[in-house]
Length: 563
Ligand code: TEU
Ligand code: CA
Image 1 (tube, rainbow, N blue to C red):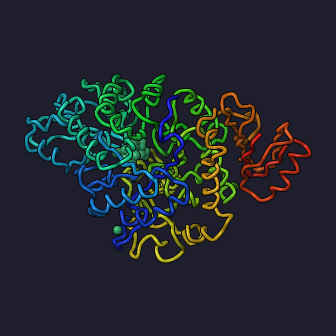
Image 2 (cartoon, helix red, strand yellow):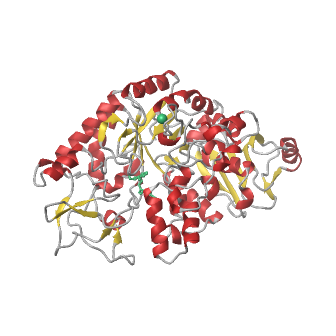
């Protein structure tokens, strides 16, 4: 693999609306982000990904952009953004923005012009398609529920939207549109942006015949994913975009890719791939239900571990995946991947250990570093997220009780990750002087940054040590370029792997006990060196290694050993 500047970096996702509010409007802002750069630097972060901060009506929280060249006034000004870039640079950090170009907002000038003249130039920036037999062109269900087709007023045409109806899909077949997008990307890169996280990008290629498929639900519709899976040729667009933009700047790109075709990994993230890296969603996909949140799969340790291991092995020799336990679309990792008995600080540190030291680029989502959890709500009206409201309705329509539907939201809602960042145990968790745009998780009185700053055994302190170890001069090469080799796979509830450099006899063992009972790990070596553990009792562990070449891992115990 060719070496790239971003290979050894650690990234952090900020959800700006919920990070830190400095002007008392209840909405996080750029000034808040700037004021926490030292906090992030201190955590060991190199790359910061900002969820969308462009001008937007916020129907889908900024993923509906009405002007790609403007900062949303809720978040601040372009001057503040430039300050953020400069302040990050001063600290040797990189800023990455969200690139949302599968669709824009229905309030974008292009769409308004298209509606005003449905046969004109701008209509061709979108998919304006004639209906069939007085009905929509096909039977696709959008990601947020309902048809993907919305009538274009005053015509017999419909426009396509894979997400909300306020997010019309952009027509990538149109070279003029592509040029507009490339121009915009380069405008931001010229400013000094390090790259982009690229939203929902697999969706940009459409089958222009828009064939209908066998319905997969009682609504008579079929998930629009079906069309994406069937159609060929997204790669040509991705290459064209790369050549015209990212490549010229040596930019870092991390793509959100679902439903990639088998065997295309090298084309996506190989040495000359479309992107630098892409998120590993295999753990999250393993839990997805056939219809929705209400029929999702329960968490099973082995299934989860094996999904991650498969994904790690698949990327070996090809490229790096971007590893996450959560993001702004997913529930909190500690609520999802830890059994009840492990939902404590030791468990949270264990989950951090096995995730951050995987092969690939670690991405930490805001609040993960203090172990923020899912948030229970008593009524659907307490949720804001468009997808949560849709999934709630789907659950009720499928016959679930209100209690069961709310339980599904508690376990899956995207708002779980979007509650305001918990800075202190004071008013509004130190997030804002005023009432926040989305209700706080009431557990901020116990889980917050200020409290954890005071303790050397906090989750936050542990994340700092863990990242420091990953980046330490002695071991960075192994953690970055070392192979991933599964270990102790036959042991129940053990998550273990080796990271070993080609040609080296010694390597690093990462091992954790997700079970309830103690577990003996036979190292067959009495000279293993302990690099990190997440619980007390290091002396006992040292002795056990020296005397008997083994360790005994208690429930929720993790160890990183050089051997
Ligand atoms: O998500 C793309 C995507 O496929 C999601 O719809 C995902 O399946 C869903 O969140 C699960 O509930 C991206 C963004 O990350 C998301 O926040 C946006 O809502 C979406 O694109 C539209 O831009
Ligand atoms: Ca604000």
